[in-house]
Image (cartoon, rainbow, N blue to C red; front, top):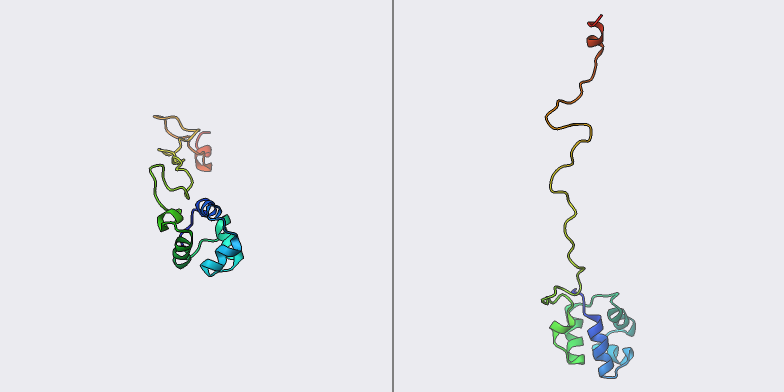
Length: 113
């Protein structure tokens, strides 16, 4: 079920001076379902999209929100750059070129006396 361009549907409904009740009757669905489609809460099936296309005299491409434009898909959020670091983080207690501090064991303490 593809998302729809609800703004375009509402504009076209207003151009034709249709109420949600009349649009629902012509499409063959309930008024509540049409209201959910127009507010973006429901994504209709292909069958309902084709019925909306016929009733509102709109091409299917204008109804489906997944249509790609030069600016991108209007139903998708803007593309964000990746937030992953390009290299692993450096240890704060280790300087490059030096060995790591060694742990003192009990056997090493006893030999120094």
